[in-house]
Length: 387
Image (tube, rainbow, N blue to C red; front, side):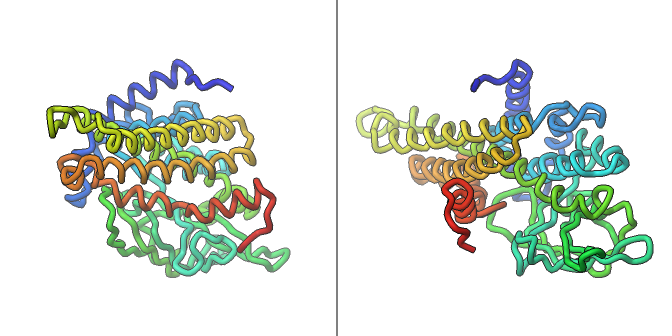
């Protein structure tokens, strides 16, 4: 195993880091508090090719893999700009469309996802079922030559910024009579599709929504893939990229917090002129957080490498572990940064307390730490399923 990036990936990391630092955390927070979006950053990242690094070249992308997209997610977060829609649109939607969409669907959507001119968000979670697709209440039934969708979705990111939403519903299999999952590409301005914004205690320019689907009619070609058989594999196709890129964003956020805190503690002097960072009570917690972030980064790299090699089962284990490790490390890093900065840590100016809500959410979503532990216990340790 090599821990070295390719020369192209090194260049990508440097270029994305430079872009992120030109905007910075101040820009991110200003947009969030004004109720605006990071439109300028997203557009420039798309124009430079960073949003489509994992999309095939024939559809306008960079032809790379999830390793490359994880680099983009991590470096923007390390610059103080953790963009959640990188996970939702390029990682989930683009991967699902590329692997399981029809050729017409790929041609229609992937070029726009690659250059940033189009965003597609993802709707699986429901108020009652959570993300348990076996119990989803959203149902699609045939209606002439199209489909009618009815149901509710919650915690759907970025609907107000997106052109389409990839809706997970359940359909009846005509051969068995059983319900099976299917995905539909639904325009966000479709008749019968309404939304209400959820107020979240998170400083973010990307919003969360409740979605209501009331007899939303879509044409036959809104069904993702060639048939209903594409539904289940398409649903699972987005999970590993989601886990890996969320983890990368967490690791980048942890790096950002540690860097901000380290700069402060190395120069802040009290009681005799020594920097507060010279005291082990300050430096050891920061060092411990740095170790945890670096360990998470190693697991992210392993997960992305396995995924890009087509080793999906192994990538599933590594991706869940990476998400767990990065979620814990990011929360620790931000909390430690706040603590060592003291009162300054709670100010907007120093730019770390503004991340407390996001990193705490990272231990819950898109899959909770407890569900990851269930997964590891069952699939790695061979324990009986607990739920």
